[in-house]
Length: 617
Image (cartoon, one colour):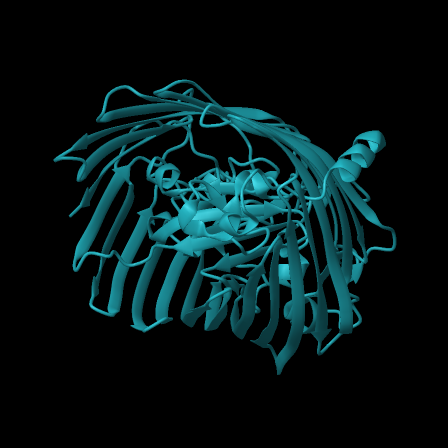
């Protein structure tokens, strides 16, 4: 593999086809664009990464799934708990990394819970019906997205108000939620959503609501298997105004969830409950000018949660995040300069907090000959750990063809991962002497595409982690690993449209992590989808997912156990009525009714069916 890295880095510096570079940056002239890797909308062929994009059509065709379930089908990503009982705690592992090494962005602002153990954002809080698109950029991206962006950035954009004066969308879904051994098909899973939005002169508005409720499954596999229900409510409000060129939008949203769970020490039924609430207000504003734009995004969020159990606890955290940046374009060059401010606070026996102020800059060089280079750097100024430089070098090269392209790319990037407030100062295993993690990632790959027909890519990645933060079950303290941890692997993706109405997609990931026991990270993972537009109104698809063997922990004995591989099959059917304003659909999961283990000791669903409708006016 080293020779491939050398050839790719020598040939690449970044993409650019046979057009004016300035045209490549104007989103209105592009059919398929990606944004996350440069923050400029550019053609996919001109990106130095293999950005995963989940667009509106794919979101519609996954109605009934949760956001973690959908993201889990993408290459390089494993979200443990997403295939289990709704409401289970999730573990987000990307390219062999941990959840705290993933940054989640919502409408341009990082979201995270400073009171949680790993300072992660709970993906269960955001319903898929409120989302317009998702972009996932893998690899170290701390230059543009700050501390902890070591393995991936999940960039979520929520739905904008319609240009019409009034538009509404309503969706209702109901179905079963049962194990493989109890196939009674009771209706015990429900989801409803409503969105009303529009534009009135210079004003825009949107009001959205979503609620979910499921029962029927026990959290743990126990002798009695008592049902543990899960419920979630999400409310969102947006109000925007345009002052000539300046556009300003205010947002406010609230998420609530309540999940029953059992006693994992001894695997016993228990009347435990976890409750959580997020309240968030935000501001986004964009001022365009002749050669660029100035953007200000800011948000304040408050997180409260409570464990009602034999080990009760309440958690409260707050953060304020602001991001001010300038985008400027000139011939062959797109430049971003900005500063990011973050204040994190959590309540323990005392109130603990830290602050960071990070200036950053990124430059993308585009050339008609097919060469592109993206470079950038950020200075992390952290109140607890001082200053840390991170940087990115991402060259690539594209050979443009009449109906497609062949792209080679490579990247080398560093990242800085801070311990959470809970790991430093919390009430369970806290260690104020923890050092920050550092992360170095190399990536080499190629992508081949035939316009609207086929796209295939292959990526090799390697990552070295130092001072990895882990929980020591013997000392019951968080600590830094003495030795470096390494992760490496290969990601393969293909999207093929052999016929006008038939589409095939598949991805495979091989991941190997060395230096620890790689808990819940499969070495082999495969996802495949076949979709066919049977008629103008009727669409059908089949899905297949394979998850390979992996290790887990038995928390009764604190020993490692090996989990067997498993395969799951699913299907989706939809039919459009009333001139495409009404869609009815049916979804089936685990069609072969396989019994499988996703997380040791936890219940998993068998064959289940969902049916619903989506109405738009």
